[in-house]
Length: 278
Length: 278
Image 1 (spheres, each protein chain N blue to C red):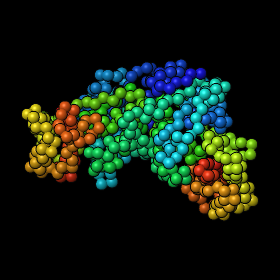
Image 2 (cartoon, rainbow over the protein chains, first blue to last red; image 1 turned 90 degrees about the vertical axis):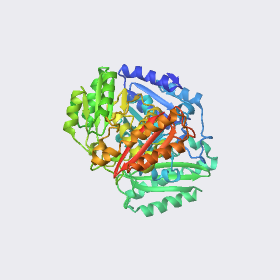
Image 3 (cartoon, each protein chain N blue to C red; image 1 turned 60 degrees about the vertical axis):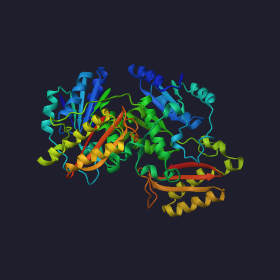
Image 4 (cartoon, rainbow over the protein chains, first blue to last red; image 1 turned 120 degrees about the vertical axis):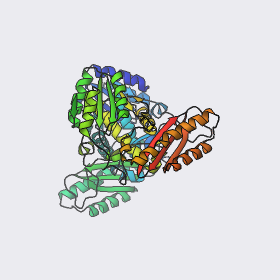
């Protein structure tokens, strides 16, 4: 396994791999890896001959008031975890190398990037698509694997890949959960013991709506009310509850197969997201 | 020479060329080719083993009030001209294939795209960078050649290529002029006989400022006044006169080596641009 910080050196390495005709799988991450990330690495490992993982906490996707500085980092632990997964390349550039002095280029997705998480985080997805495109251009993967917890992100990346004529297959993993149902996230470590318990309400609320759907309750307004009550009982502050078409993120009038239920909720200052597709 | 409309077919063809290890040169155009375009094709022909030219009038870089519909087109003539230059591939996609239903992805360059031409044409450069990136992803060139008349465009493309980690060398040709000095442009055909004569004032004004510079006149305010008077005498309506640093397009206090003098002037409804670097 090679660990490379330099863009030029990574490109040189990748170019050799390309010449050997090996297929390249890629998992972009912000590090502080958990089982969710590792499940994506395993998908890449299974599907491709050469697996690259990037570790880069991307300032362009954080707003000034967000947790860029406190975002958890542990490179040594990450490297060890990825070694065990038989990753071939860890690309971990510096912020300076990625955003050179005079950097000015950004990629954005109209509409999709302004809904849901894009309302409280208006520049977030522009930061995401920009860094992902840059990483794609450096790693040149055949396949890239994204987490399902960030549903909107994966949808936006798919749109970008299609629109920009990139020859990359986007695969989405499954949401990996703790035993009590909380979706794994690097941000879970911000939670107090109490908040950690409360936060399981996200998964329970999603399951409840799925169950209600099976029982014939199809009204999104009712579902939102149910979710909101459950969350508030656990001291959560709702950022948004979205009940939308999973392809265009537009609100649905009736919950049906293909409806996405997505939540963003604050516990204290920690913002967690979760979702399910009916 | 192959003429291909389909993106998928072009990608297949390019992939074969890539496998044969031939270097690829690329000249993106909006067609209605003149000697300016052909000079770029010749540069590509000299520097690379496989030359691709795209012909696509890109709606994303026109505003609703602009000349998209009237923009001159003559595919047969273009194909004949490019055959003579021994071009290997003409890629001439339909608008529908380039901007699929649900298309949402755009690339923009902060600052640089909002100055000069970006003031009257606020979405123009976003349209340019988006289509050029798409074409780069389809043609995968080693070298791409752009015209020098569109100085700001070439600067913006260079910035994009650097910022997005693309492995493409950008080359700028020289401005090719008619015998009387008018810079060649597909839009020159819009001019009436009278306007056509008047329009030579652009080149004369640029030469005048160069001459003044040699004689020690370094004040940009004075230079602007001189240019404006010359243009108005010829019934031109100034869109902008920019006297700026050629790298960042910021106004200079003194005309020096490396100062860009760029003009955009309306003759009737036809907007022409021209420039020179001191």
